[in-house]
Amino acid sequence: MNPELITRKPIKRSKKEYLALGLPAFSAFVLVGLIILLLAHFVWHGLPGLTWEFLTQSPRNNNTEGGIFPAIYGTVILVFMMSLLGVPIGTATAVYLSEYAKQSSLFARSVRFGVNTLAGVPSIVFGLFGVGFFMQFIGKGIDTASGSDIWSKPSLLWSAATLSVLTLPVVIVSVEEALRTVPQELRAASLALGATKWQTIWKVVLPNSLTGILTGSILAIGRGAGEVAPVIFVGAVYSLPELPSSLTDQFMHMGYHIYVLATQSPNAAEALPLQYASTLVLLLLAFSLNLTAGLIRMRIRKQQY
Image 1 (cartoon, rainbow, N blue to C red):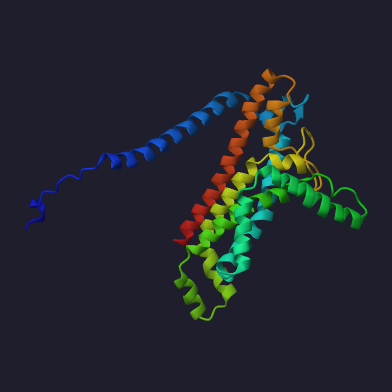
Image 2 (cartoon, rainbow, N blue to C red):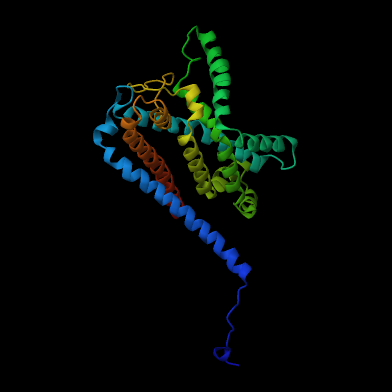
């Protein structure tokens, strides 16, 4: 029989199937629409105040005049240091859990339980942890041993360390999931050719999961860059025209700067344009970091395939 002569009856969908297909599409449309409206609102109100002087000058007159360059600089340096501290430790932990530890071992289950618990802890608790552990324990210990009094104070270093602990669960979970996507046949083939366990991980597993590792790093950077509560306790200041020149210096932070403008400004009407412009800059910084990491990930993926 000629297949062309066979008439196919149209598939009739029930109301439940239409409802199951329509609700996710409608929800996605509403979510994307709200995001676009929110971004348009900030662009409309913040773009007029986004001048070269605003981006390059220091704040003046109780943050109601001048620019936000120290806050931009402090935020970028903080995110960079946080990534250097958190991503390698999180990646190493994920490699151990995925490649070395037995899935049924008590230690591996304890680590995973700790990671899942940390993921649900409020960010302000991490700030208090940074004060107690990094400043009062490690910093005071260094001051006692060296005879100084600078390491037990709020600083850029302790802020980056606190945020790295905050972002560890995101990195560990994302990297571990990326490592699991590498087929076991590749590991077996590498070991069969005489490679050691570490050579297999370094030459086979990590290169094939690099895009997933970058995805976890992007998620961690995105969360750490927007956190304000932890850095209030361990390093961020109300206003500081000078740029931080060492790890023990305090710094300005974009998120905290916006909070100060919204809640502690002597004239709310005058500070409102600065709030919109600062929020727009913070959004642009977050988009720039994510875009850069995404482009690097795409380039690596093209080289692999």
